[in-house]
Length: 328
Image (cartoon, rainbow, N blue to C red; front, side, top):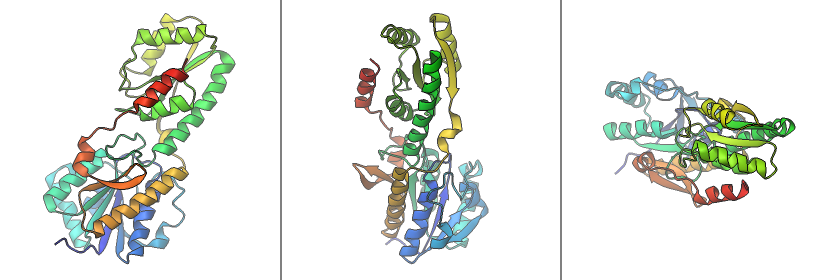
């Protein structure tokens, strides 16, 4: 029979994403609702090793639901990747009489949580927090929707300049291994082409497509490029290639970078974080462990951590077709 959960710790790990604070708030207030203690762990697994804990109650998380980033900070921990480091973390949790752990982060953070559970049989629950939306077992990760809105706003502003000067803009968005941000924002921003890791458009085909766009009467173009796209070594190589093989365009590059991670979370991300936090804590109280909380068919469901880590999120094929039609 699983040990009764009387005290839960929550940490944020890996890259920050809008909605992490809303998730922290939800975990803390769900603990308060069920009359159990909650502890915030500063600086992710590094803070877990050092015992950098702070007791949190319902009032300690007031006014954070609308804030980006994470009040608990985030850090990558090389030491936690070692058995010795995880042993130190377990001792700190035992010393503080903590019975369960909620980890808000991506697949790297979940891998650490899974190994930790396997070694010490310590109850863990994951909440997916990453703007890339690259976690299996959920249709949306925390921060994805906010990042989309941030990128679309930037594309709208860039298009004003592109159309004013007959320019071709390559706009790089985040997405090291997946093209979810690029595909969605490309459609929403009216991009002429969208380059993603899952689909190898090819340099020649890209130039042909841009030429067709110009012949159809377009005097400016926006091309959205996921940072993990495989066509060129980087977005600047793409610019150079088009410069050499197309005439009549003033080609520019805009790399949006970390601005995509910042800002106040959208309504969708705030609600999602609240739902996930409740599910994570209540699942621990029910004796569940080694799961990630995800959104599937608009229902909050549990996916085994191992499956969430090893599985691959898939690109929406319908959106690819819509993108082709809209770029006509």
